[in-house]
Length: 222
Image (tube, rainbow, N blue to C red; front, top):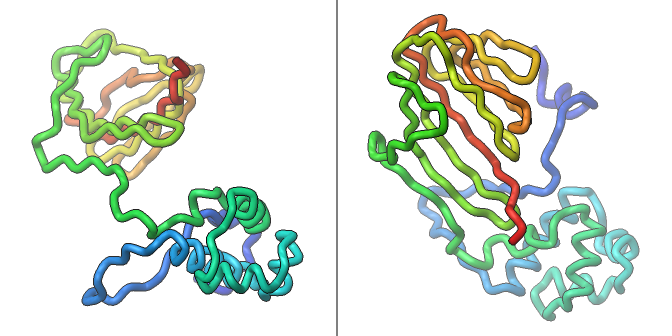
């Protein structure tokens, strides 16, 4: 059995350096910070996470130690150029320095069984698509579908679309084709694919089949 120390030393273990997390007592109220306080907390948290002292971080970013200390104590407002320097030095997106400053961010909630039924090009009888949510982010549009296949047919649609698709099988099993490869997918199996490659089920092995399809479409330039 691997220990957490073993995992930390494993060079093959990928970690998302851009995110932040902290423990919260259930009785603690949800935070809504002023902009300066949010930047202060996020800069300090990122610096400590990377094991840097205030002096080391200031030298790496290219600002004075006194200025960094003021930023971390919410005693000054950062200019755009300083924020850019901080983000570059910490190797994080600039937006990550604002986390907690605004409590309202977009989300899409769909109660069980209330998702809109949609028809995709090539939809067959016994193939049901339930829209679980669609969210337009800063650079992409995310579409989440619950797909149910309950009847076999002689032919099956092959889809092509821009962006990346992630499939996670909940129930049943099927042979799923992408480009020139066919995958046998069963409960717990997942497949992430380039949507420009032709893809779709080519054989329904164990019915009914239910799987989640999450598609990240690139933002279309107008």
